[in-house]
Image (cartoon, rainbow, N blue to C red):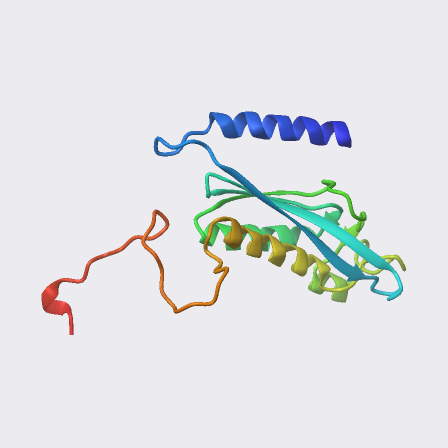
Length: 173
């Protein structure tokens, strides 16, 4: 597992360095997060789940999670990321310390039950999968500078992510 991870990291950096934006250097930003969960059927059980969000050139996003998260969770996250004009990639079965969570069902999957959803006493708490992908979404906004770090007035600063359409003088109130 470690060897495959090292090979993936090597190839990722190699590809990222070959990408060129609009005459700019390639940027790679990442954010690790540790999330704490309990067991669904055993509240005394604790899960320390480590995730990594990687952003390349502010438009390629990689969500790396340990365990096997239900497919619908990754598909929902990808749809949200595509709405943000990003190119999302989800990698399960990755490792970044912490604990291996095993199967991580969606809330709906936990309710419907079945293999990976409610067949093991040691399974992670309901809602953990959604929380993991919400953390990736938050990390993306932080890494791209869209999440405010200080309180302030509403508004935005002009930049490459915004298209500003001027309002003609005669249409202004």
